[in-house]
Every structure is written in C-alpha cells, then in structure tokens.
Image (cartoon, rainbow over all chains, first blue to last red; front, side, top):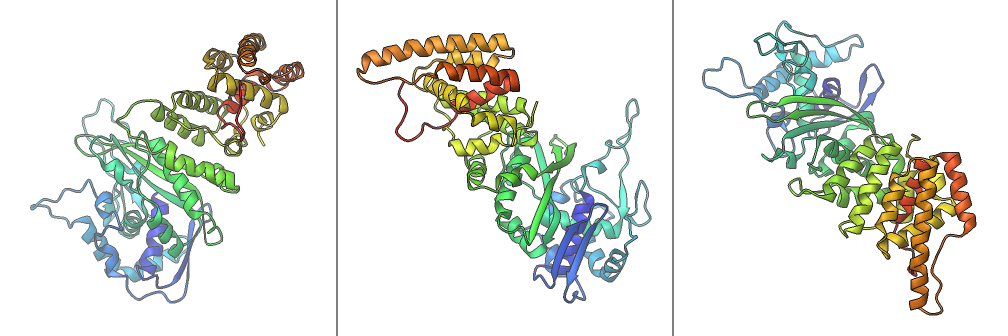
Length: 338
Length: 114
C-alpha cells in the first residue's frame, strides 16, 4: 500500500490540482511507473497541502496529537516543507530506476511511517512482544518517500465517511491498484464515488467500494484500468486505532460482470439494495449482505449456497425482491467448482 | 462457464426449479426447500425429490379441483430421470443449488399457477 500511495503521490505532486501535465501510472509488477508527458512544473502546487473536503489529511495523520511542548513539526507542515524545499531532489531520485526507499528501525533524517499509510508499519505488528513490557518500535522511512506517500494517502486513499461513526468498530482505507491509470481520469473517478460503504464488516465495506469502483470505471478502460483494491483495516479502540489486517482484492470477477448489461444490472442491485444496510438493525438483510460479500470475495459453491439459502428466506419474508433470471445467471457463471 | 451455470440452464433443472418456485411462493411448502437444501447424498436427494413431488401432486390436485379446466404445472418423469442422472454426473450439492437458484428467480410474464 505504501508503494501504491507513493506512485499516486508522486504523480499528484507533479500534476497538482491544475493537472499541469499528462500523467499516467502503470503497475509493472516489481515497480510502479509514473509517466509524464509535457512540462514538469518547477515547484509543487501549494494547494495540495491544504486541508479541504477533497482530501483526507486528517485521516492519514489521525494518530498525531498536537501538544504545545512538542518539538517536532505537525506532519502536514513537514510534508509541505519537504515537498517544497526538496522538490527537485524528489523528482531526481524517482527518475532513477534503482531507487528503493530506505526503510528500517532507524533511518537517518527519516520519518515515522504511519499505519494509515501501511498497516504493516503499526507498532507491535512486526515483532514479537509476548512476555515483554514495551509498546513495540516504530518503523521509519526516508523523508522523500514518506512525503510522497503521505500526499498519495491524503488525496487518493479512500476513507469511507459512514465508517467514522462512533458505533462502527473498525475503519478501512483502500486504494485501487493502478494497472494503467491516467491521473486526471482517476481523480474524476475518485471524486465521483460516494464514500458510503456497507458498514457491517470490513469485508462488506471493501466489496461495496469495489462494486462502486468497477461501475465508475466502466467505459473508461482505455484511460484507466484497475486490477485490484489494496486495503488496510484498522480496529478502533479507546486509544489509537490498532492494526486489523490488510490485503488485496482482485477485481477480475466484478469486471467480468460488467461485460454484459445483465451483469451491470446485477452489480447495481448489489450496490443500491443488497449492501446498503443499517448496521444496527439485525436480521436477514445483514446476513444476506455478509453472505454476498463472502461470495464476491471467494465465489465458491459453498459461499453461493449460503447466499442463496439466506436470500430465499428473505424472499419468503417479503424483505427481498426476486431476481431477474438473466441477472442471477450472470452470477452463476462464475461460481467456482467445489 | 461454471457447471452450476450449465445446470441452471438445463431443461430438467428448470422444470424442477419452476416447481420449487411454485411450491415455495404459492403453496408455502418450505419443508421441500429445507430438504433439498440439506441433501448431500444421492439417497437424500432421491428422498427429498420423492417427498417434494408428493406434496406438489397433492397441491396440484387441489388446485385443479378448485379451478376447473386448468392444469397445474408438474415436472414429468423424464425430468426426474434427468435430474437423477445429472446428480450422478455433477454431484448432489450442485444439482440442489441449481434447483434452488430457480426459486430465487422472478415469475415470468403471464405468471405461474399452482
């Protein structure tokens, strides 16, 4: 996730809010490539460091607590200073093919990698702490990589707004992996997607976001194509959020569904009717949303049978509508053999 | 295409699926649904289908008695033989899943009667 944020962050640092150049991002397996056509601006756009509704600076640095006696700069200011003062250096090191971020327990002039940027950076996540009384050590990264990753996380990390409610016990941050992305189109897609996802569990939220994403990308594959959604899950506590896991969700199944009009309709039904449920109202709708998410994550026969078994009970109770034959058929095409 | 999709489109499965849709939606025969849902072995499927057809037959006769001149839908013997053959070929769980899937589907235009 850190690398993906770095790719988006570097592209956005160059492009700025005004989209100064035509910028593509490609995932080439071992590395992301940021391809810039046109003139690269001489300095970054200062507006990208302002806290606005369109970004999530406060979410990225949510664990930072400002105090009067603090000797370090607030992280947003730090990002801004590094980006402005070392703009040329950042571009220079990232134009080298052999550049690899410096990551470790102690990096010279490094910065702490926040768990909101990569959950594997969380304290106590990387080292055994059993029978030892300490919090765990922080992970540091070189300040240039940290700066662009923070920009990427703030502007392109997807933080569902409805999961910020106090009664939701987890939060999710996700980002679509750029198989081939034109930055300006990605920004348009990112802004268009409503950041309200199924709040029952992290699985349902990730699946719901993925459905919205493939619907939004439809018809734009020549400009923008994503192959996976990378996600971080954090568990809320009375103190700071704790790591709750992370991973990648492959979008192939959902993208296959968008190839037919019946499949698109199926996705719309899931997006508008099956997944938006109230987390406080227990019942068949919640059970169906959980079963459907499990099926979309792992389209196995067992998961499908659980889904259909619950769905038919919802139909009998008149809480759920019957399926159109062609729409259900689209789902059945992808059920993996037992 | 998955096997489940192929089975879903099979005429014999469609016929039993339609019968189950009628049984659940109109006759409120939830027992047959549960029995099919839980069938895992061939003997269990055979027993579930036998009971299902017996209940369907009873409901069909009642319907025909109450609506003179109308004929209720029932899968025929050939469909039954084919479903049993498909269960041997693809497995009981897949066949049951395909039949139950039809029960999730909306009634086609013109409606269905018992």
